[in-house]
Length: 402
Image 1 (cartoon, rainbow, N blue to C red):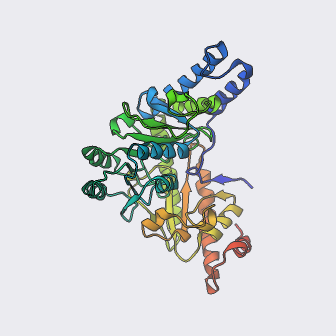
Image 2 (cartoon, rainbow, N blue to C red):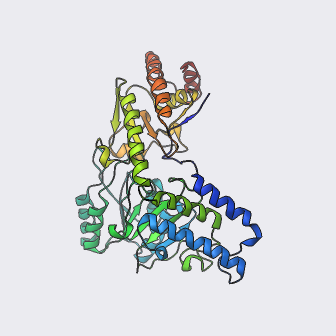
Image 3 (spheres, one colour):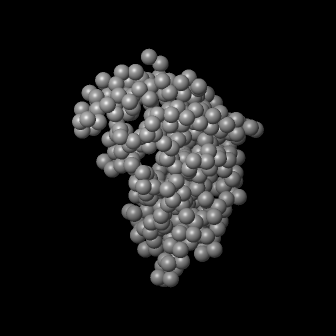
């Protein structure tokens, strides 16, 4: 049976440009050394590292010196929160529950948090952010940081980042933008945006896992999360992963080619539109989040499925050769359902996220369209008894033959 991968928003396959670059670096072997050394091998590694930094900066719209290479977006988010909260100890962090768990949990560990509401589409209200900041200032403790993701990782809603940055700038509060879900899928001009800190992941855009970066606004000084070395201009200790950085840079360079990002986005919007049309043709299935495709990430859509829990749907799709994702607790490593969907007032236990990428084809859409309706119909036939979970869900899904 052929497989159809519709979970690119979790991680997308390594682009050939990245794979070829990484293999070349790894094959160099003893020809490369510590980028911090002045010998030939060290200088060779440094050249690769700085080339990657330039490529990443070009895609993100910033200067290479502002790019701090990390092990991924999770580390970058934690570094942003650590640096901002150390600058203002005890000051609150303002965010919405639709932020990624890395932002929410890192903030709650280091500072009191103030949660702002979101709309039914998952959008942050800039005015609510402004009110929260003004209230904190009136209490004599100006906020240490505001989180505002570039776009939501569950439903794809593009956030009003520029408006949030403007509110924060007026009150002198730094802003962190989690761009992991959107970078490489929508245009991003970090310097033009004016955010203080921006976190990016490589594996979400076709680079390798274990690579990412934190973009730090020019002139901003924050305490490093990782100490014990002077790497990354003393902003992140530890020997840099040259091969992973080079792969990240190669993927960024591919996406920065004239017209490449727009071309991929157009293709992905068409595929997602077809997926949504196929899914919503089934009664009781509707789109969650922003309905306007122009205000949603091009490569993903989140669906609500009335009367059927997510886990058996995912298992039935998997048996049909289709990989997808859900905000349900049963389909993830978390014991709690998606706080993103809960903040929007949606039922995470009955949600399905579909996402395409640079390898996706119309055949993937056709496979989903053929499998989804019959799977939901058969599972709904089980509504006469309690909907199954756990091992019972596996047995029930096995009965939902493609």
